[in-house]
Length: 259
Image (cartoon, rainbow, N blue to C red; front, side, top):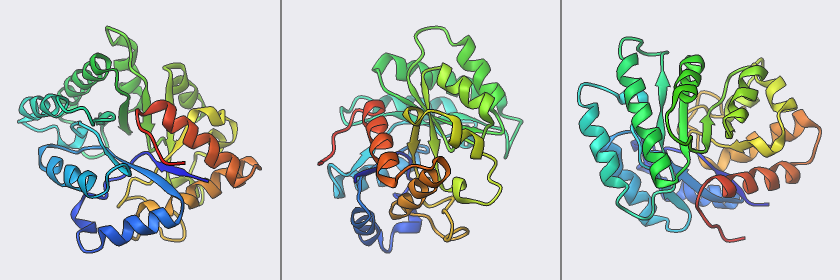
């Protein structure tokens, strides 16, 4: 049963020594596609190189990560627009708001987030939203967003059931990753009660490795552990979760995979 890793940063230096082997391990675990959200201008080249090395398997996005919204963020956003001149970009992101590391740049993060939402709407592309310690601020932006709201996914969703329902109300999906395998992860009620039609799966490699790899480098081959845990929580089969989350990812992102 094919799986789609909707969020991976395997173009980062942590994989420079064994990227090809890691990609093969993912394929051996039935991963049919790996989607690559961008971080900033410095990550564009390695991301593109990875997509060129693994055509039809790795797919690029264009975006500015909220923790990388610095003094040069306007130049960075211009670069995002430049990337969108290509016809292979499958999403806008990773964008959003992060108040875990730095609260002082909130206004700049909001401006950058709004700009990328507009780009997603103009290009008819899904948006990949990073919302660490910032769900309320994200919701406020979405509620006040002028223009047609794009579809998208809340990457690494860690909110409660009420917040999850708000996400779905915006027409967006919940990205579920390795945290779901952690004891006392806090998202059990979400995974058990939100319709499977609103979930996609991800790794966020090289971060947030699932059990039993917690604390080690994550990679796309571990995606099956996320699917297994969701299936266990919901009391349904692995294949049912795999089939539906793959269908959801194909509905959300403009990609095609070999079946």
